[in-house]
Image 1 (cartoon, rainbow, N blue to C red):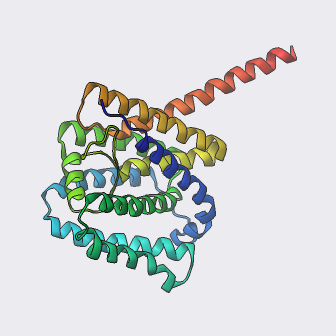
Image 2: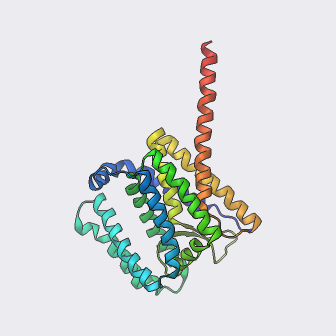
Image 3: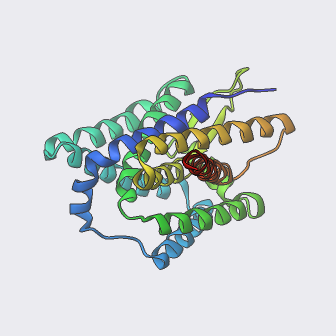
Length: 277
Protein backbone atom coordinates (compact mmCIF):
# COMPACT_ATOMS: atom_id res chain seq x y z
CA UNK A 1 0.00 0.00 0.00
CA UNK A 2 1.43 3.42 -0.91
CA UNK A 3 2.05 5.97 1.84
CA UNK A 4 2.35 9.73 1.66
CA UNK A 5 3.24 12.38 4.19
CA UNK A 6 4.59 14.95 1.74
CA UNK A 7 1.23 16.27 0.54
CA UNK A 8 -0.21 16.91 4.05
CA UNK A 9 3.12 18.57 4.93
CA UNK A 10 2.95 20.77 1.83
CA UNK A 11 -0.64 21.68 2.73
CA UNK A 12 0.44 22.73 6.23
CA UNK A 13 3.50 24.74 5.19
CA UNK A 14 1.76 26.57 2.34
CA UNK A 15 -1.15 27.41 4.64
CA UNK A 16 1.27 28.61 7.32
CA UNK A 17 3.16 30.69 4.74
CA UNK A 18 -0.08 32.47 3.80
CA UNK A 19 -0.81 33.16 7.48
CA UNK A 20 2.70 34.59 7.98
CA UNK A 21 2.58 36.76 4.85
CA UNK A 22 -0.99 38.03 5.29
CA UNK A 23 -0.40 40.66 8.03
CA UNK A 24 2.70 41.91 6.22
CA UNK A 25 0.77 42.67 3.02
CA UNK A 26 -2.73 43.22 4.36
CA UNK A 27 -2.61 47.03 4.35
CA UNK A 28 -1.12 47.18 0.84
CA UNK A 29 -3.71 44.80 -0.58
CA UNK A 30 -6.55 46.63 1.15
CA UNK A 31 -5.40 49.92 -0.35
CA UNK A 32 -5.50 48.36 -3.82
CA UNK A 33 -8.90 46.72 -3.29
CA UNK A 34 -10.25 49.84 -1.53
CA UNK A 35 -11.35 47.94 1.60
CA UNK A 36 -13.87 45.89 -0.39
CA UNK A 37 -15.44 42.81 1.21
CA UNK A 38 -17.41 39.89 -0.20
CA UNK A 39 -21.09 39.75 0.68
CA UNK A 40 -23.00 36.47 1.03
CA UNK A 41 -24.35 37.05 -2.47
CA UNK A 42 -20.82 37.54 -3.83
CA UNK A 43 -19.72 34.27 -2.25
CA UNK A 44 -22.62 32.36 -3.79
CA UNK A 45 -21.83 33.80 -7.22
CA UNK A 46 -18.13 32.99 -6.79
CA UNK A 47 -18.81 29.33 -6.00
CA UNK A 48 -21.26 29.03 -8.91
CA UNK A 49 -18.65 30.52 -11.27
CA UNK A 50 -16.02 28.10 -9.98
CA UNK A 51 -18.36 25.18 -10.55
CA UNK A 52 -19.16 26.34 -14.08
CA UNK A 53 -15.46 26.88 -14.81
CA UNK A 54 -14.63 23.29 -13.78
CA UNK A 55 -17.27 22.08 -16.23
CA UNK A 56 -16.36 24.37 -19.12
CA UNK A 57 -12.66 23.49 -18.92
CA UNK A 58 -13.50 19.92 -19.91
CA UNK A 59 -14.80 21.11 -23.29
CA UNK A 60 -12.42 24.02 -24.11
CA UNK A 61 -9.48 23.18 -26.43
CA UNK A 62 -6.18 22.80 -24.64
CA UNK A 63 -4.41 25.56 -26.59
CA UNK A 64 -7.08 28.10 -25.63
CA UNK A 65 -6.78 27.12 -21.96
CA UNK A 66 -3.00 27.45 -22.14
CA UNK A 67 -3.10 30.96 -23.64
CA UNK A 68 -5.71 32.26 -21.19
CA UNK A 69 -3.94 30.74 -18.22
CA UNK A 70 -0.50 32.05 -19.14
CA UNK A 71 -1.87 35.59 -19.54
CA UNK A 72 -3.78 35.53 -16.25
CA UNK A 73 -1.02 33.76 -14.32
CA UNK A 74 1.68 36.15 -15.56
CA UNK A 75 -0.43 39.14 -14.52
CA UNK A 76 -0.93 37.66 -11.06
CA UNK A 77 2.79 37.00 -10.66
CA UNK A 78 3.59 40.58 -11.68
CA UNK A 79 1.04 41.98 -9.24
CA UNK A 80 2.35 39.77 -6.44
CA UNK A 81 5.94 40.86 -6.92
CA UNK A 82 4.98 44.52 -7.46
CA UNK A 83 3.06 44.66 -4.17
CA UNK A 84 5.96 43.00 -2.36
CA UNK A 85 8.63 45.18 -4.02
CA UNK A 86 6.96 48.19 -5.70
CA UNK A 87 9.30 48.51 -8.70
CA UNK A 88 7.79 47.64 -12.07
CA UNK A 89 11.03 46.26 -13.49
CA UNK A 90 11.44 44.01 -10.45
CA UNK A 91 7.80 42.96 -10.77
CA UNK A 92 8.48 41.75 -14.31
CA UNK A 93 11.22 39.34 -13.21
CA UNK A 94 8.91 36.68 -11.77
CA UNK A 95 6.46 36.40 -14.71
CA UNK A 96 9.36 36.61 -17.18
CA UNK A 97 11.13 33.74 -15.40
CA UNK A 98 7.93 31.71 -15.42
CA UNK A 99 7.32 32.21 -19.16
CA UNK A 100 10.91 31.39 -20.06
CA UNK A 101 10.84 28.20 -18.01
CA UNK A 102 7.50 27.20 -19.47
CA UNK A 103 8.32 27.69 -23.14
CA UNK A 104 12.03 26.83 -23.14
CA UNK A 105 12.44 24.15 -20.51
CA UNK A 106 9.16 22.56 -19.51
CA UNK A 107 8.46 21.07 -22.93
CA UNK A 108 12.10 20.22 -23.64
CA UNK A 109 13.27 18.46 -20.49
CA UNK A 110 13.84 14.72 -20.98
CA UNK A 111 12.42 13.71 -17.59
CA UNK A 112 9.08 14.73 -16.15
CA UNK A 113 10.39 15.08 -12.60
CA UNK A 114 11.96 18.48 -13.32
CA UNK A 115 8.77 19.70 -14.94
CA UNK A 116 6.84 18.66 -11.83
CA UNK A 117 9.31 20.48 -9.57
CA UNK A 118 8.84 23.69 -11.57
CA UNK A 119 5.06 23.20 -11.42
CA UNK A 120 5.18 22.79 -7.65
CA UNK A 121 7.34 25.89 -7.16
CA UNK A 122 5.23 28.25 -9.25
CA UNK A 123 1.97 26.71 -8.03
CA UNK A 124 3.11 27.32 -4.44
CA UNK A 125 3.99 30.96 -5.16
CA UNK A 126 0.66 31.51 -6.85
CA UNK A 127 -1.56 29.97 -4.16
CA UNK A 128 0.18 31.75 -1.26
CA UNK A 129 -0.21 35.19 -2.84
CA UNK A 130 -3.75 34.42 -4.02
CA UNK A 131 -4.64 33.46 -0.44
CA UNK A 132 -3.26 36.75 0.89
CA UNK A 133 -5.18 38.82 -1.68
CA UNK A 134 -8.46 36.97 -1.27
CA UNK A 135 -8.07 36.84 2.51
CA UNK A 136 -8.78 40.57 2.73
CA UNK A 137 -12.10 40.10 0.89
CA UNK A 138 -13.60 37.64 3.39
CA UNK A 139 -15.04 38.00 6.87
CA UNK A 140 -15.66 35.25 9.43
CA UNK A 141 -19.25 34.84 8.24
CA UNK A 142 -18.54 34.84 4.51
CA UNK A 143 -15.64 32.39 4.76
CA UNK A 144 -17.90 29.93 6.61
CA UNK A 145 -20.54 30.22 3.85
CA UNK A 146 -17.84 29.95 1.17
CA UNK A 147 -16.39 26.79 2.75
CA UNK A 148 -19.80 25.14 3.00
CA UNK A 149 -20.89 25.96 -0.55
CA UNK A 150 -17.50 25.10 -2.05
CA UNK A 151 -17.52 21.72 -0.33
CA UNK A 152 -20.99 20.93 -1.70
CA UNK A 153 -19.91 21.98 -5.19
CA UNK A 154 -16.72 19.95 -4.94
CA UNK A 155 -18.58 16.81 -3.86
CA UNK A 156 -20.96 17.15 -6.82
CA UNK A 157 -18.22 17.86 -9.36
CA UNK A 158 -15.94 15.05 -8.13
CA UNK A 159 -18.32 12.25 -7.17
CA UNK A 160 -21.37 12.94 -9.35
CA UNK A 161 -20.34 14.64 -12.61
CA UNK A 162 -16.58 13.89 -12.49
CA UNK A 163 -15.87 17.20 -14.22
CA UNK A 164 -13.49 18.37 -11.51
CA UNK A 165 -11.30 15.31 -12.00
CA UNK A 166 -11.37 15.58 -15.80
CA UNK A 167 -10.48 19.28 -15.80
CA UNK A 168 -7.65 18.71 -13.29
CA UNK A 169 -6.11 15.96 -15.41
CA UNK A 170 -6.44 18.14 -18.50
CA UNK A 171 -4.60 21.02 -16.81
CA UNK A 172 -1.95 18.60 -15.57
CA UNK A 173 -1.37 17.31 -19.11
CA UNK A 174 -0.93 20.93 -20.27
CA UNK A 175 1.83 21.25 -17.62
CA UNK A 176 0.20 24.26 -16.01
CA UNK A 177 1.03 25.04 -12.36
CA UNK A 178 -2.46 24.61 -10.94
CA UNK A 179 -1.77 21.76 -8.54
CA UNK A 180 0.84 20.35 -6.18
CA UNK A 181 2.33 17.00 -7.17
CA UNK A 182 4.31 14.73 -4.83
CA UNK A 183 5.49 11.12 -5.20
CA UNK A 184 4.22 8.41 -2.89
CA UNK A 185 6.18 5.70 -1.10
CA UNK A 186 6.83 3.20 -2.53
CA UNK A 187 7.33 5.31 -5.62
CA UNK A 188 4.56 5.39 -8.21
CA UNK A 189 4.88 7.36 -11.45
CA UNK A 190 1.34 8.71 -11.08
CA UNK A 191 2.10 10.17 -7.64
CA UNK A 192 -0.66 12.12 -5.93
CA UNK A 193 -2.09 15.54 -6.73
CA UNK A 194 -3.79 18.32 -4.80
CA UNK A 195 -5.47 21.20 -6.60
CA UNK A 196 -4.67 24.78 -5.68
CA UNK A 197 -8.34 25.41 -4.90
CA UNK A 198 -8.07 23.04 -1.94
CA UNK A 199 -4.93 24.74 -0.63
CA UNK A 200 -6.59 28.13 -1.18
CA UNK A 201 -9.58 27.05 0.95
CA UNK A 202 -7.27 25.82 3.72
CA UNK A 203 -5.33 29.10 3.67
CA UNK A 204 -8.45 31.31 3.65
CA UNK A 205 -9.97 29.40 6.57
CA UNK A 206 -6.74 29.61 8.54
CA UNK A 207 -6.22 33.31 7.81
CA UNK A 208 -9.68 34.14 9.14
CA UNK A 209 -9.15 31.83 12.12
CA UNK A 210 -5.87 33.59 12.94
CA UNK A 211 -7.58 36.98 12.66
CA UNK A 212 -10.36 35.92 15.04
CA UNK A 213 -8.48 33.80 17.57
CA UNK A 214 -4.84 34.78 17.14
CA UNK A 215 -1.96 33.61 15.00
CA UNK A 216 -0.99 30.78 17.37
CA UNK A 217 -4.37 29.12 17.04
CA UNK A 218 -4.20 29.77 13.30
CA UNK A 219 -1.17 27.49 13.11
CA UNK A 220 -2.94 24.93 15.30
CA UNK A 221 -5.89 25.05 12.92
CA UNK A 222 -3.54 24.48 9.96
CA UNK A 223 -2.04 21.48 11.78
CA UNK A 224 -5.50 20.01 12.39
CA UNK A 225 -6.36 20.44 8.71
CA UNK A 226 -3.13 18.72 7.63
CA UNK A 227 -3.70 15.91 10.14
CA UNK A 228 -7.26 15.35 8.89
CA UNK A 229 -5.96 15.29 5.33
CA UNK A 230 -3.32 12.73 6.30
CA UNK A 231 -5.90 10.46 7.95
CA UNK A 232 -8.37 10.62 5.06
CA UNK A 233 -5.57 10.11 2.57
CA UNK A 234 -4.44 6.98 4.43
CA UNK A 235 -8.00 5.63 4.31
CA UNK A 236 -8.13 6.34 0.58
CA UNK A 237 -4.97 4.31 0.02
CA UNK A 238 -6.13 1.54 2.35
CA UNK A 239 -9.51 1.08 0.67
CA UNK A 240 -8.08 1.83 -2.80
CA UNK A 241 -10.74 4.43 -3.52
CA UNK A 242 -10.61 6.82 -6.47
CA UNK A 243 -10.53 10.61 -6.44
CA UNK A 244 -12.20 12.20 -3.42
CA UNK A 245 -13.22 15.83 -2.74
CA UNK A 246 -10.35 17.20 -0.66
CA UNK A 247 -12.48 20.12 0.54
CA UNK A 248 -14.34 17.65 2.78
CA UNK A 249 -11.07 16.69 4.50
CA UNK A 250 -10.03 20.33 4.90
CA UNK A 251 -13.35 21.52 6.34
CA UNK A 252 -13.49 18.52 8.71
CA UNK A 253 -10.02 19.33 10.05
CA UNK A 254 -10.97 22.99 10.51
CA UNK A 255 -14.22 22.17 12.33
CA UNK A 256 -12.45 19.69 14.63
CA UNK A 257 -9.91 22.41 15.50
CA UNK A 258 -12.70 24.88 16.36
CA UNK A 259 -14.58 22.21 18.32
CA UNK A 260 -11.47 21.25 20.28
CA UNK A 261 -10.84 24.89 21.14
CA UNK A 262 -14.43 25.34 22.29
CA UNK A 263 -14.27 22.23 24.52
CA UNK A 264 -10.90 23.32 25.95
CA UNK A 265 -12.31 26.75 26.83
CA UNK A 266 -15.36 25.19 28.50
CA UNK A 267 -13.22 22.83 30.58
CA UNK A 268 -10.85 25.66 31.54
CA UNK A 269 -13.75 27.94 32.50
CA UNK A 270 -15.34 25.25 34.70
CA UNK A 271 -12.00 24.55 36.33
CA UNK A 272 -11.49 28.26 37.06
CA UNK A 273 -14.98 28.56 38.57
CA UNK A 274 -14.34 25.48 40.71
CA UNK A 275 -11.08 26.89 42.03
CA UNK A 276 -12.75 30.20 42.97
CA UNK A 277 -15.45 28.37 44.90
